Length: 160
Image 1 (cartoon, rainbow, N blue to C red):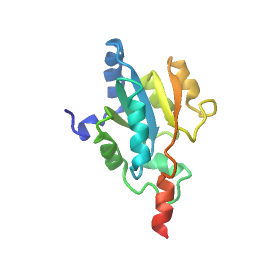
Image 2: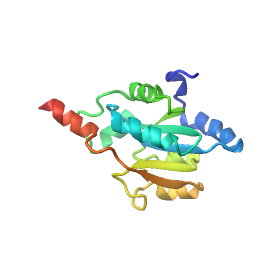
Image 3: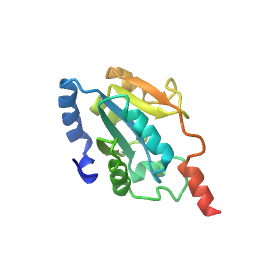
Image 4: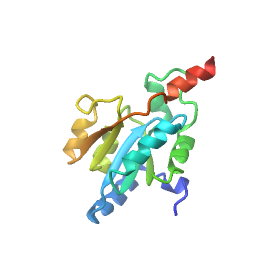
């Protein structure tokens, strides 16, 4: 069994690993996010994503990428290496990679997942990565969110 830290791979090395897995008939599922404070909504989404294939890869936004998103000036609360390791500690996650771009498009083009998963607050036809997913032969699946769970809401509650 791999440790959480052993599941973290640079994009290029992971692309080679996944190419071999696909050749062996394994279905690769990819999802991404900041995962700043891991909560039950994240866990349930990741478990549901894993059920869609044989290998679940999670792309983690780098610290610089999170800062460019509209998450608030104090984010991320937890550094990218620690966020990646916490996500990697989940049994449903096979690999984690950190990406520095604003969207996971470059990671999707490199990893070529058969399924790309997003939470229910997104629309498959409007997310910027959909054309990249389709260009590598994949499909986008939108999974329902667990109501009431949000890192941004948790941060707001802690401030009060």
